[in-house]
Amino acid sequence: MLHEPASTREDRPAVRAPQLPLSREEVLFNELRQMVAEVMAIDHELFAEPDTLPQVAVTPESRLIATFEGQLTLDSEAAYDRLDARLAPLQHIAAFRLTVSPPPQPARPHTIHILTGRANPRPRSWWPNALLFIATLVSLLLVGTTLAISEMAETDVAEAMQVAANLPLELWRGFPYALGLLLILGSHELGHYFAARRHKLAVTLPYFIPLPFISLFGTMGAFIQLRQPMKNRKMLFDVGASGPLIGLIFAVPILFIGLATTRLTPAGGGGLYEGDSLLYAAAKIITFGHFLPDGRMDVCVNCSQLLWAGWTGLLVTALNLLPLGQLDGGHVLYALVGEKARRLYFPIMGVMFLLVFVTDVWLFWLVLLLLFGRVYATPLDMITPLDSRRRVLAIFTLIVFVLIFVPAPLAEQAAAPALPDAPRNSAMLLPLVASALVLVRSRLRR
Image 1: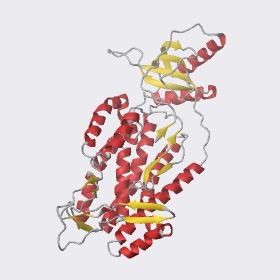
Image 2: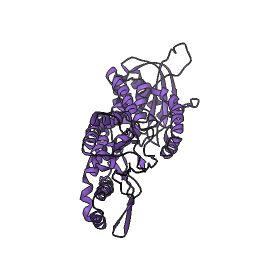
Image 3: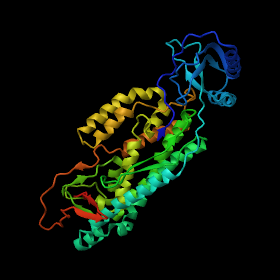
Image 4: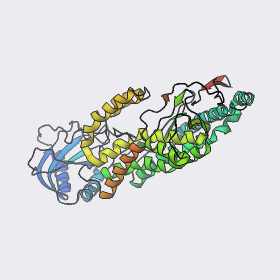
């Protein structure tokens, strides 16, 4: 989930020494003072110069014009709503912050910044979203059809080759995987979308990211873009947590249906091994009565398109729940603990660095997190805390992350000698030729 407005790290923007205001500026300042006085007992005020660059930004054109310190006379959430309604006709917006001062408790505990540049984003066209969705659907159908052809080759190589030669007309065979994963990803993004709309936030439709030919998954997921800052931490949590939690409602049943419809194969057949999360390991125990692989047999994850869709959906959800930056997990953690979330950046990055030595799959994500993991979506009102119900849900969401996180996804598996009476897996890659395009897909062998 990406954010168009800039985020902030500092609680208070740097403000230059006040200048003698012009008459027009003085009238504006007096008007702002009267508005703020309706919600705050003002102890200190400062009028910024027009060219002051704020570290609290709403749009790239935002400018800080005034800062007031004191004690709120209303509940912080009610105070923000009241002041925001007064500022709207001026196209200004407020940012509420706790005053940062050394102990003892400061006499002016609350700070209100007034900024220009209220976000009023224009509606965007829906056709790019539709084109990306169609491209992602085709990409997922290619992956699902490849899985179907690989499974078909176990019993009839000639038929599998015939299907591969007519790939464009055989893409219907990949619908179980495509629809399963789109249901997980779509519900995830629509969870974000409807939570944002419920709070009257400007938000885009989901952007799906196709990844054909070079990926075992067929997609790099999807995202929506929030086009204005969130009001408070309650709103940040609602939008951030709704996506993964609703996506899991569909991912877990799809995973169990996939486990129930797949088959077991001899373990140690080489190739790639899909990693185990705590939830995936428990699901295999529930389905088969014991943990797999057990040294002799293992789940054939690519023998069921729904199983591969469910496992992939859980992996994508876990990646989104990493508690960093503007990922869903970063939103949840920041909503729960506020600025303290930044202190966890280096410990979490240290764990991610160690995981690179487990599997180089994490190297790509480590680079992305180094570039973007320190940027958090900071709400306008940082005074209002989460209520108790949301705090419990936030903790639950972080526990879900622990349950579905896969430390070693797609690890290399050493090949074991074949047993004389064991059925052999297909050892060769199937060439998938269609309209001058060559699609080569490796099976996840056991």
